[in-house]
Length: 396
Image 1 (cartoon, rainbow, N blue to C red):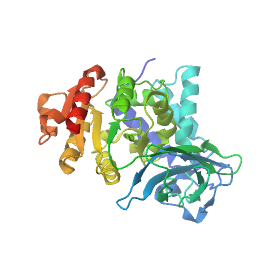
Image 2 (image 1 turned 60 degrees about the horizontal axis):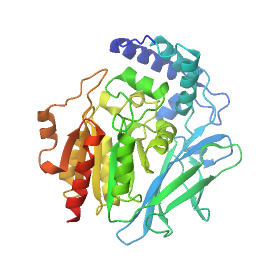
Image 3 (image 1 turned 135 degrees about the horizontal axis):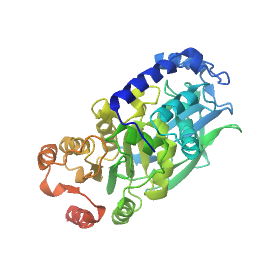
Image 4 (image 1 turned 45 degrees about the horizontal axis):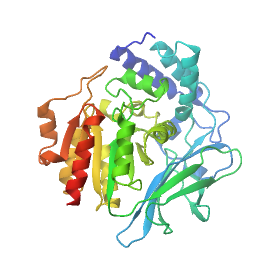
């Protein structure tokens, strides 16, 4: 496979493609319920189309984690996305053209894989849709109307099923609706341990340091775990109990949720996946935030996790390709005593921008962090004793 790696070439190509994307003649979806060009979605929400699911939509329910409020009530944030089942005319052709021009689609197999994964990205978002959820097969929830991105995010009081319980729920939708129509909710009490993990190049090969590498891993390659990380996370889950909450965070767009959810279910402990609310319709959403600006997203989301579990003891795991050391260091100083261990995977192979693996970088990122509370590793088998020691020290 010959891949063109000139960034200027890729940038110019994406600009030209974006001009096509905002052309209403290219984007009009004659089968769509909305029958609107993309510009209207870019300009703002179309709440005049508010209504329930009719059976012609794709619905994604995100797995979540329930927590106890200060008053002892069980609560959880429910995230849902509604998309059209149809892809606007011409859009798949445009993106396949990108792949062919940069050398990604050169076989019938790679073309089929790209077309399948593009289906997560190219469907029209449907703002204003309301979804009914049968929570635990006995309680009925109704989401708020989705926003301009098709996402709704609601906080609900839940019945008390007890710490460590996993409750399955299902979208109450008409026949014909497809997508991720079932979800799981883990009940996690206020005490104990928890884990916050980056996804890209921490637990999954993503090549975030290289835009073309990112496209290959996202649209063509089989999702591959970082060697040794599935065993490490399974061992951590045993040490801190299987009922401890795991959070997997990436600043990649929410369009990747089905792809990443399947990956995490196959290789890692049950957990909540947190993605940004950007989509491909914002060109910055095609690649991780680090290419275009600072990653305040992760800090904001981890602060929310702290508001849910301020008394839990957290393990934070990331890598050196992006800003994980700086993010975790800032959060450690922001919430004294909350983060008990930070582990950073030192990325030693790369295609593009070289990771900053210098002692100066790590010392600056972890200024004010106790020496035995942060650790940089190259292989996961280095982490076993570090984790056991951190847990033992915390118990004393």
